[in-house]
Every structure is written in structure tokens, then in C-alpha cells.
Picture 1 (spheres, rainbow, N blue to C red):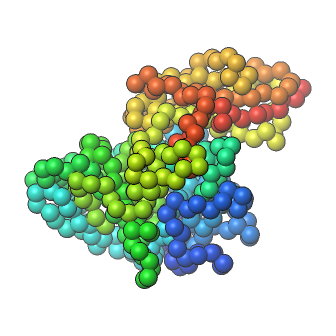
Picture 2 (cartoon, rainbow, N blue to C red):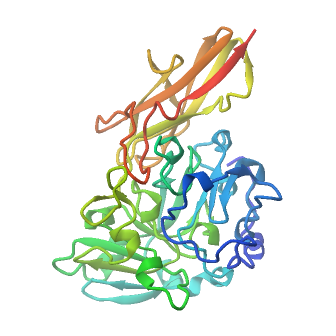
Length: 411
């Protein structure tokens, strides 16, 4: 990586006081907040919208602040490396983070493993002796692209910046399960429970971050204690996080304190009612499909702003493409709003099927206005669609049409 990232020590110091959000904001952020879209006022980092204490180490010039628990990467700030610099990576916390002190001695963090033939409690230090795997992958909030839904669903109005490509390092869950005698018979789900504090007087299931995914997701999942070669900071789930590649961010449970193999999905509201694919105007519930796997998606990161005028002539159009559950295998670019397409080329290393690929396309542009779009196809033959899949909460928007960029070219 070209950019120097702050040391873990600086992170720990900067994270002090993370339990307190901005003045005037609740110290508890309810899971999958239904704040009306009209109340969302995303802005660049400023005195009015500062970075919260637990994220002070981040690059303020690359970020957009929605709230103390929702911070977006600017479209053009993902950088020119496949890996997103950690100090530019988005933040999404369903519940306000635990006290910063939990990262002071990460090796002492404990996790219970249940639903196996030999249930056991491990410290993070013990997990480090069980196995090691580095996993490059796209981390993306389920609501990335929500701002483009015409019915303006409640929740954070993300555009493209609730996503990044990082490398998590930890122990393969399959290795851990094998050492514990395997999963008990009849188990259907892998359920991770987060370690956020639940205030007294609240129903734990209304706040608890506990997510269940199909048992088959265990195959590539890990328990991670590092990201991009550094100890996991509090902002991204440290000291330990459940990582389920190919699945949306909420399924990658932060501050994970229990991993259980279960016959039923978690009773927590974030599992039963939130993150469900329901029709517009219909509240989510167990009868609806859960938001799990990510679809193929791409977007242009450069040029990134309609407010910037470009000189006529050769213009390099760049962006990122992810395949969801399979590798991105093809990328196309349109300079006329999708009327015609030309194949672009992937650039940089291929880090595996769960990572994104950067792409580039050079167009000779005459003066005028252009609508730039991209669409990707993955190894399974799934192509990014023109239209979004309409749903009540604005999840999994992979419409190439929504993600277009308008630019102005002058002589």
C-alpha cells in the first residue's frame, strides 16, 4: 500500500471516549435505523459534522458523515490500489460501539463456540494458535445505493461509498469446527452474536446485533483479528469480527463474542424483521427473504463529479467491479448512458473471487455532457442489471443505471 496508515497505538488513544456520541445524539443507535430519508443530511467532515472520537484517526478529506455511526467514503477516494486504505474505509455500526477499552488487550477477548460436539470458550490468543488465513474481500453495507431509490426508504442515504475492498486475517471457522468435533447434527445456521452493550430496561432482542447465515457460509468464513495487516480497530469490529465473504456487511458481526450453530435463525429483531427483502410499503418479517448474499455490481470512481469540467481528448475512466459470490469476469463501460457498451480491461492484481477488480477504459471525448456507466458480469454468468430490485428498505441496489456519473467536457 502506498499510503501510511496510523499505528494501532494511535487508534487506541483516538478511540477513547467512543461510548459517547456527538452532543445531542442518542448513545444507542437502533439496529437498521428507520430514520426518515428527509432527515438525512450527509456532509463532508466539518465542525458541524465531525468524525466521532472512535474514528478520529480516519482521513477526514475522504469521507462523508451521515451520523456518528454511519460514515461514507467519497466516490473518488477509494484510491488507485485494489485495497481500500483503512483510514478511508466506510463505517456502519448498527449499535453504538462498545467502550474503547476492549481493544487495549485484544488477546484476552473471549468467544464461546456452541452447537458443536465439543463446545468451548477461546481467548483471541488461543485462536491465533489454531490457524491462519488472509481473506481479500469486498465489505459492503446492505444499504449501499439506498439514496437512488425513488421512494426514499428510511435509513442512511448511502450512494456508493458504503463499500471497500480489504484483507481480513484470522482463523478459518472450518478449521475451528473440525478441532471441536464438527457441527452437531441438525444444525442449519451459523449465528454470530456481537458484544455491544445493551442498556438496562431494553428488550435485548430489540437491540442485539445477532445474525444467522446458512450453514454453508462456514466454508469460507473466518474469525478475524486483523484487517490490512493491522489489529482490528474498534471502528471495524475489533478485537474480533466474524467475516462471511460474499455476504453483506451486517452479516459480518463485529465484536463477536459467540459463534453458535443453530437449528433456527436468531430471534433478534435485526434477524427476524430487519434486513428483509420486502415489497415497498411492507414491513419486513420472517416471511421475507433475508439479505445475505451480494449481487454483482460495479461503479465508476473516476471521473467522479459532475461539478468538475474535463478537457476534451483522451479521458481515462476508472472504477471497481465486484462479482458478489463469484469472481467478476467481464467489465463494460458506456459513455452514452447505456445506449452502447464497450469492453474495458481489469487492471491490478486478481485477489480472488470475493475481492473487487479495478478497471480502466480510455475514451476520446469531444466537448459536451456525458453519462458514464459500467456493468460487470461474474463467473457464474450473472450480469449487473439496468434496473434496481425494488424493496422497502432499499437493499442490494446493483443497478448500473442508478450508479451512472454525469461529466462535463470542455474544449
